[in-house]
Image (cartoon, rainbow, N blue to C red; front, top):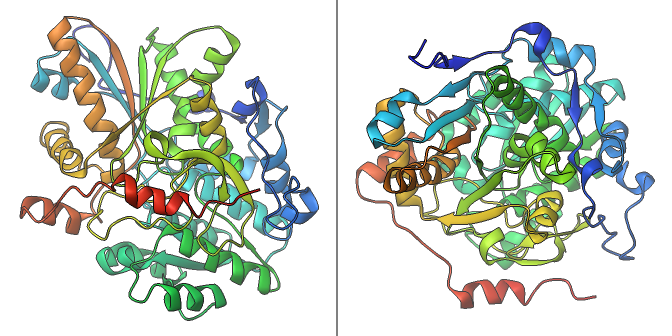
Amino acid sequence: MSANNIPYKIYLNESELPKAWYNLRADMKNKPAPLLNPGTHAPMTAQELSGVFCEELVRQELDETTPYFPIPQEIQDFYKMYRPSPLVRAYCLEQKLQTPAKIYYKFEGNNTSGSHKLNSAIAQAYYAKQQGLKGVTTETGAGQWGTALSMACSYFDLDCKVYMVKVSYEQKPFRREVMRTYGASVTPSPSLETQVGRKILAEHPGTTGSLGCAISEAVEVATSTEGYRYVLGSVLNQVLLHQSIIGLETKAALDKYGIQPDMIIGCAGGGSNLGGLIAPFMGEKLRGEADYRIIAVEPASCPSFTRGKYAYDFCDTGMVCPLAKMYTLGSGFIPAPNHAGGLRYHGMSSTLSQLYADGLMEAVAVPQTEVFQAAETFARVEGILPAPESSHAIKVAIDEAIQCRETGEEKTIVFGLTGTGYFDLVAYEKFHNGEMSDYIPTDEDLQASFDKLPKF
């Protein structure tokens, strides 16, 4: 216990664990724009979506008025294997930075998948099993989502087909093997297994792939194989709903000790971690009950919030998925091969995009060498090797703490540590060997992608 009686790690007891997920959209005055049918440009119906997603997940996806969804008991029981996750006071980092700021991080890496992704994976696998499906398909970038889903499918005895972005498949073999250990089949994307994969390879020979490519392949296989549905680990409303468990636990732990944060910082790729972490705090902000500074941190090499267009775009490169209104770099955007920090998706959650457009949160883009410098600083004093994705939030948390040192302000900072980086050591090796560079797309690069946005 510290001198001011705040433990290093704040845990909730079993009776304090959230029993329901929080639907942030219920408190949004300006609702996220609906998904559109790519053929008719009309809002997608539940019937249309149920051909791709599980029926209960479609209901959750489209619901904008129900504030809380009870967590089924079987999912609650699974959560208890690794939840509650700790809220940690970063005393050693504070001392290293000589800052008056108080820094807390919510650590989601204390499960075998190594990240927060398991929170939604187990929910989506549960609903697939309840529907009587044989299996599910999905995409994965760095591999956290694929790893989490393979674990969840193994638990419910479901088949799991994963299309992994080719550059990650090659650079991160250990996550690939964890997926296979849990029974999943893992295919580098784009592949020759699907029509859309063959088309992408014909148009872009030698491409290292993107999440948009992998999504297209996974959706094609799900919709053409009886007894399968497609699931995904970010972007959609249903995923943010499940991930609200992160923010609900965080707020309950802070409230337990009367701690009021000034700012909440999260890394942002598609939006699952960020949306889950900020959910109850943003809810208070929307209801006028409290105010917080909320900061989304994204990579400078894939800057959808800070340099993207707020427009309807395809969620996938093959243009077979619904259109979503979001901050996007264009569904054809493929990050440079030297981009090693994750957060590779070309767009952002429609929910978070609407909040950002309404001025309710900030966004900042950071170059990856600075991200890995921050990761190294954090690892040396806090004893956890952070995932590169998480390290984007660490970078800005450190920057804000240094600012507090310069101004003398005693602000309370909370950030999300989404997982561990033990399967990301190839990226750490490149950083330590001086082989990592900061590629930032030019305006011309982005404009070429923007020019291909759907026009209607």
